[in-house]
Image 1 (cartoon, rainbow over the protein chains, first blue to last red):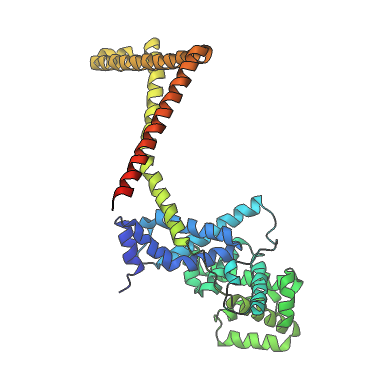
Image 2 (image 1 turned 120 degrees about the vertical axis):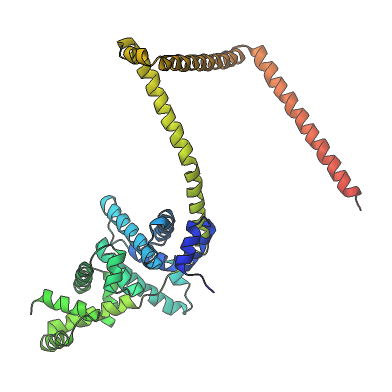
Length: 194
Length: 191
């Protein structure tokens, strides 16, 4: 029988450090997808995902066993990414710069032609998401990639349900505006084709 | 209806948060206004695109990399108490070595020493240990400095040392070669 997250956490807290690898195996994809969607770049996303797991390990004793481990982990990952994006904004270049597609997107099972179209589409969506402020981006990622209800997103981002409702509304408004104004050039052919 | 209000209605509709009346209101607005209808289409397209994103996979050795980071963190954690103790001890020793003579010179320590004579004996012992340690450290530095100066300034001494090192390394090399030959011979003679 597969051990629950809580059982694994308890074993790690008792000193079985290697058991944490099982939790990493279980949630590496989820955490990586959040960091990738938030940061939009594979290398930075991988580093952020690793950092999120390390932080989870460091603060494992603070984890509330009544909460979902996945939500707790995703909250660490998304908050870390929000911090990174804020730092980037202070020190860095424009977020509109085109980002290379993740290698995993190229290695799909579909044919090369379809894969190219899908990559183009993925890129357009990523470009669109990149136009959002970090807090809005986190809400959108948790909503669309994890299908989380308002309450769970609010728990992960340590805020209220009404704040999440408002962030999603504002984010969609901004995305629609970007699409309408042609702010993301790669999106225009997709929207026209729709 | 204002655009902002319509946008909110659309956003809530996408999350299935509208009651029957609100849904009817949204439908009416879309039917009556071409602009709202276009906005709704656009919003649905974006929503569809966001919902149908493929999952991306991390590197195959992701878990191993995370565990390596954890290992490094655990190692750092083991050293932390010792380093903290060392830094704390150094700070205390520095403070004591600076404060004690100052307190003695200004006479601030005398009343305390008069009341607790044991403290005076203890202080004297500590000062003696400190004095001895300082003497030994100075002696060590002086011997090393003199030795290096002697080697650098006297060509004969430098020649003797370099020669000794060459002889020693040759002897070690020959000994290792002999050992290797012996072990090879032993392995070839074994059936």
